[in-house]
Image: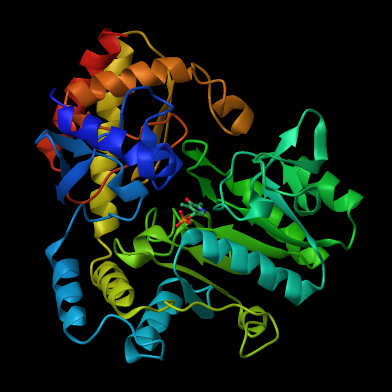
Length: 428
Ligand SMILES: *Cc1c(COP(=O)(O)O)cnc(C)c1O
């Protein structure tokens, strides 16, 4: 595999961009080696600047439910481009988009568009605080909610109730209002609520976690979480930036049959352009300016190109709900194939899958929270990643991520992936 052009671009990039990339995980640091620079994507495949072609399962980290450049999104973008790229004034498409989202996700009665998942979660927390008049919130260890200061908190040794900043630049003050609970452990939530009675504005959770690798929230756990939040007047926020329109037409909340008070979106909602959104109950969303006093704004929010791409993606989903059957069929075929390969090699690695999201953990025990996820052998994952890449399969360059199957993946793609998996595993 020739990667000369990628390597020289990376050397050049490092002179002008921190670490050579505009988002850290792209740099291949977790798996070793040097990142590939991509020239083109089409369907299930991408081609790098050296001309190598890969079947890929990143899908731009989630947005590409239909693979790269599906014609109906490209057409919508071309059409929108004719009329102008941005006005900073309302357009009819924003109304159509809001109607579409509230129609697809019944718990969302009103919605505000933003430009990324980070903006969505950051704004949702502010609104929940404004609505409740409280300052603290609970997040779960291993869940990712974008890079706002108060989300970059992990438990320090034994300090479960007092957040310790994970990143320099996050102040102690910011960390102090973030309380950490254990995923799938309702007792840890109950304890935090008891210790901070009447002070907690929100609980935010990835209802299917994708950012510690794929970990599903137990149905009963989420139902109990719903009850607790209702009893305590706490705003329950489902961060569906990854799972929204991915695991079902109505997101993870449809799968789990639980209605959150607020939901955040990103990724698929932008059809491949930079978009996020937050929404929820009318009484909460009417706190948002200019309807209410909680300030939230954006120069390019509701951008016409972004809305055109997102609207095309979501209206396709609405018109073709059978895409989720197709994704389930393809993903379960891939899961069976991968598991079959592992079995013949006598490896009992955990493979978690929810719909078209899956993660193969290099640990031989069930993974159901952060503590079990991090038992995975990341050195082995790095080697596996490189072998898969040499076999033409491009997976996420880090263990604690999801692989995404798209409707563009063909049976041939999946079979090649299953074969590559066996080859790669044999060589570890
Ligand atoms: C990707 C992601 C985010 C952050 O979205 P960005 O668009 O990268 O800012 C937030 N929450 C979850 C669950 C995500 O997967």
